[in-house]
Length: 69
Image (cartoon, rainbow, N blue to C red; front, side, top):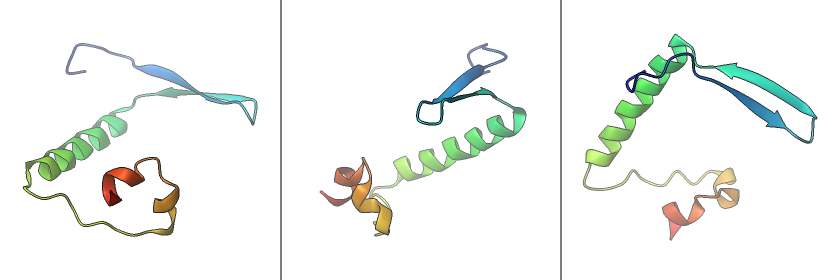
């Protein structure tokens, strides 16, 4: 919306399930994205990154190197 784009739609394809889901950006989604954007700005403005959380799924995460290395 900030760039003048209205009615954003997309599709999520689940090949293994052989399903496709149509999705549309709602006002609630836009509000959530604004809150996420604020949270990201707060994190970026700090001198030091947040502490590592050490959850079981972290070892399988694609971004593991960013947190632990």
